[in-house]
Image (cartoon, rainbow, N blue to C red; front, side):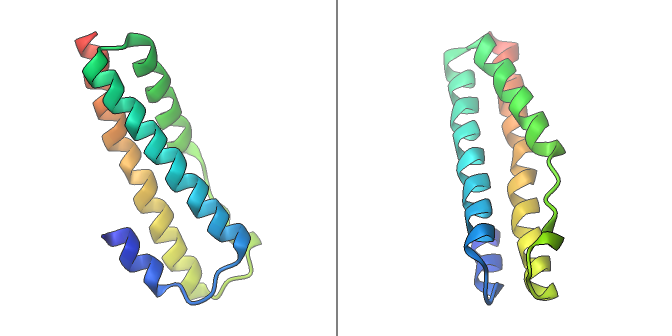
Length: 102
């Protein structure tokens, strides 16, 4: 819900930025799905892969300065991306529980 509300605040966004957000969102959903598989299948290898991917996602830094956006839109976009990235903590914990169960 928070992501959707922030998306509504963005007035004008380029296709590049829109694609960036879409890619991040899709990637996080894929990793979330894998984390759930780790948990239910007790898959040690997949758990390690998900944990590694979460670490990579957490280390990524999005440089919004290269996009020509009004400051308000940059702030909103940052909130959207940081909300997405905060989900990696949850995903990481699910994968760690799957790792413990395997």
